[in-house]
Length: 486
Image (tube, rainbow, N blue to C red; front, side):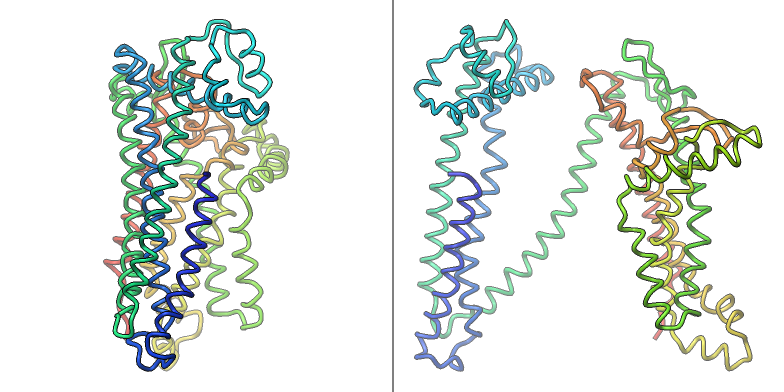
């Protein structure tokens, strides 16, 4: 039974339990809901939760643990030589999974039975032709052990899915029956429902924390592997980025870091003044009708996909800067440049800064404005000397958060700034960023344990630390200098 069908069955049983539980609660007090401890809906929710939550929790846990158990058993049967080599075991499991998926597709297309599939062998030309029909190409020398493990892999998966389906259904029915037996007029169903909601909120917060921890650990583990192969001092202080993929590579961070900071600086020079001025206009000067139109239009920019901005940089902004500024001034002849990417990323960040600054300015109490007007200050003086100083911590935080977004941009840089890793001050030259090189280093058929591939994780860890420090600094600024108004 597939996971989707099993989920629908459990969900349908839980929905039935909701109505049955609600009806049973009303029946226990002869239809007088005033005699119930909780509202009738809470009793239905209790049955729904007892039916669905344990069953779905078991299903999620099973789907996480089963692949690890099966992979461990398969790798153990491949022999100690493969089991002790992490890279070899990973490649072997990829071959096993690929062949197993081909056998599944072959069975679905031809209607072969499981017994017929078990009789297939890797050295038969017939199986190569049949698997080629479903898009799985086997070489002339296929390890028979890998082929047999692929068949065992399918059997283990099928058996695991069957056991999971039985256990999940049994647990759902058990929860359904147990919840119904607890339904009576004095049962505190509201407490059960509210306790579940509280734990749901806690779990949601925990997922966010665990996701961050998982990201850090995955980056950190591969970064440590990289620095075990490549010297850490050369990575952080080398001025050359030249991955050769055949030895003798120079993997220096500084050119990529310079390009990242340079492009981000240009973007912030564009986004900060325009975003703040737009926020001041919409918050202080624009009539309500104009504000209701201008603010959504500005925020609409944030909803445009970055690949569209990349095309805009590639087709419009880049050629314009090249033909009308760079070439006449003798600064370059390429449409891909720091200025191209910086301008477009700046436009992308305008609604981010504008929207946050607008909300921060509107949070300044009106009484402060009225006091300034009472002392004879004009509107512009009030904005410059009262409103903006009061909103400054929040505005600084918004700027730093926008800078983090500019540093992490990839698509616009790829299409607008090029891929040249170099140091320079000319904003009309092509440069690149850390994010672009992360993508390029992980693209292609390269050995995963080579320094040219593992360097992507070191770059990702570096970028993570930079953006994390910016976000922490932004929060520190906001909390330290924020004024509390009554």
